[in-house]
Amino acid sequence: MRASERAYEALRRDILNWDLPPGSVLAEVELSERLGVSRTPVREAVAKLVADGLADAQRGRGTVVSDVSLDDLADMFVLRRVLETESAQLAAASDQTEKFVPLAQKFRAYADDSQILEDPGPYYQLINVMDELIDDAAGNSYLSGALSNLRVHLARVRRMAKDDPARLAASAVEHSKIAEAIARKDQLLARAATIMHLQASLDHILTHAETPKGPHE
Image 1 (cartoon, helix red, strand yellow):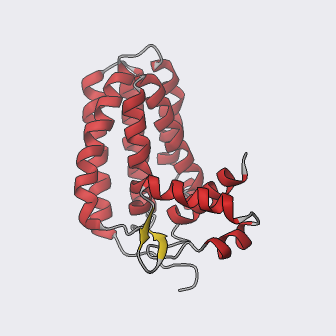
Image 2 (tube, helix red, strand yellow):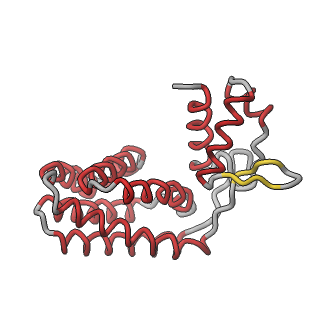
């Protein structure tokens, strides 16, 4: 992996985890020292963050981590609903539905054992696996590309709502229902299950959102 790619992945992870909260200045000298690379890879990485919408170039301040607001959440979820319901329906109509059988079982296991969800990291990884399987099964690169960009910003917003074991367990059930519908090739049920999950996610974020504290707060 090139130095600029390593720098980009590290900075992107810090932004999504709120280790670099909105408004943080992305100074080349400081970042090059912290990441152990020269300024050129850092400059390239920051330019890519700007292209992703994760950073903004501001006059007088340089490049800073872009703001994230609940005011945009409803609009993001409108787009998410359109994209994800279509993807789920396409996946249910594909020849890859058998891949979702073990996935549904794994989500059920999470829902049935709340202790597993005390460390949500592996659970979120399983969600990423499901997203990738649906994107692959849907077979539409424009659709998956739009979702990939949207998920980056949704990940930042999701961190504004603290992980709640009860919500994670409910989310696991919702994901299992989506996977089960796709596995059964039930396109309408796949759409409906996706809509129900997205509405529950939106309601939870709006109810529990607060600004995460940075590492030095």
